[in-house]
Amino acid sequence: MRYVTTIGERDFLVEILDECHVLLDGQPYEVDFDSIGEGPVYSMLLGGKSFEAYVYPTEDAWQVLLHGRSYPALVIDEREKRLKAAGGGRVSERAEFQLRAPMPGLVVSVPIEDGQEVEKGEVLIILESMKMQNELKAPRPGKISRLRVKVGDSVEQHQIMLSVS
Image (cartoon, rainbow, N blue to C red; front, side):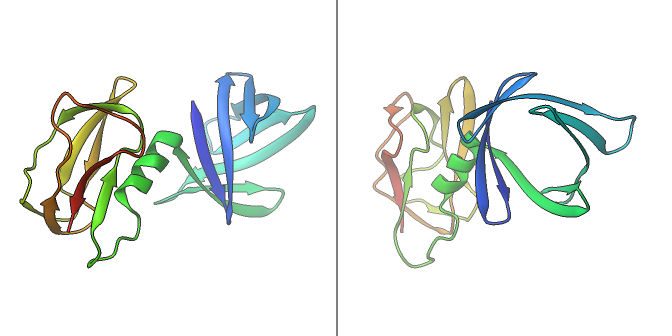
């Protein structure tokens, strides 16, 4: 499984290979990570060095206390990051928005029609990729225009599927 971890302004790509091996930004590491007792204290052996950290969730991230410093860490898997990017993040309320496929996949549902008015957050397309169904939602209210896919269509990553004006 691959994750994007954001600490401060920096993103790290973390790929878990197995329970003892990870890739951090493409660099392999052997790790031993385990909780100590029932609290939020964890022990990690990394490259022959021992680390102890307090790790606990907050509303929108994780807090990691290591060597007396607190680090907020946002951890999302790569798929979720692509889905958020496809949702547009900050989308202009006036400009036309083009919904692009965040990954290759199969269109399994299109619960909207060309010309239909939609609200922000409304499901526009359900895309199946790697046996997972992903809801692609409207980033803002608007009118569906140029619907370019239908149920059963295969799409490539970045392919434009529809527009919201």
